[in-house]
Amino acid sequence: MRLEGLVRIRDLELPLLRRAAVSVPGAVTDAWPVEVENLLRAAVSRLGGGELQEAAGLTLGLAHGMRDRPPADRRRLAAQVYSISVERFRKSQEEMILGQIAEQVCWLAGTGARATAPNDVGLLPPRLQHRTLHVPRPGRPPAVLTLHVHPVELLRNMDVVVSPSNIHFGLPEMYKSSVAASLRRAGAMRDDAGDVVADPVHDELLAWRAHHGVLHRPVRPGTVAPTGPGALAARGIRRLHHAAVAVPRPGTNDYDATPQDVAAAAARVLVLTDQESAAYDPPLRTVCFPLLGSGRGGLPVESSVSALWSALAPAAGQGRELHLVVRRPLIADLVTEVLGARRTDDEEKGPDCG
Image 1: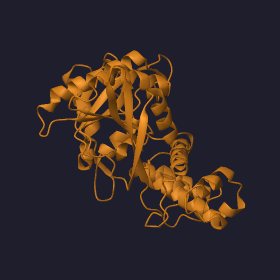
Image 2: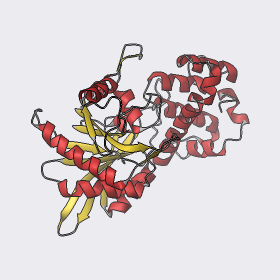
Image 3: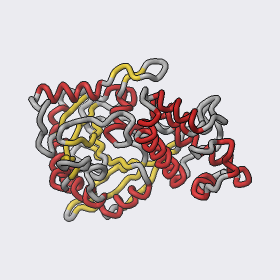
């Protein structure tokens, strides 16, 4: 698709994209090139705006006036979005952008989340899913846990959202695909043109490191640093808790995370939430965790879920609401299975999911 562009869709062998497009309810199978294009537009529209979404639209020719432009022109213009050379863009950002689009295509096809009526970007907002899990606890009533199945930046009306971090509390760049990058991107302040004018999540975390004397050294695994939510406050997010669970592996770009550190960080989040709660009216009650350590930290999903629940199970109830968030339905199914939970589902139209 990147090489040939939108005008050549019908001439290409695209079995997986074609299957993904027609798996959506209401898809018109005889016009599959249109359905493929609409699916790609939907995927790009979910990238959160900013440079990532703009460069993605240019890369595939989805931006206005780009439909029949040759691939070299599209690549050059996308590189200009990041103010880098074409060669550097080809070796780094372009692969990341295509991976982000592919992830969104998989999610849309797997959930049937695409709407059928077109709007300015091709499609209406997707359907987002909550699962209410009833998790058994020996000798006690089942704990109630809400599992969100959508990107973390679409959370709404959550008192505390936990952001995974490494032990240096170094936030990834906004164009990355991780949970931490997504929250940083969503928390950035933008002008009317969509350009970033302030990066409050990064700045507050930097100030926390300076205040605690850890600007130039790592913290202990399991440490949690609180910051404000930046622009996420408009979605009802009140605090971000950055949980240091990923330990860099010397001499590589890889990280390690252990179940013990994940459990320690989760327990620390709950303690910190209780400590901060008195300063807020109403108090902080809802806390949402991603699967700590299961990304760059390399922990299997099962290990992350088990470690999180070992810390959260004793605290379930007691005036607080616990939430988990994952991107994909298949991961949500695995979480449900690991917890041995009974589930009920709730879907809402549009991106307001809390």
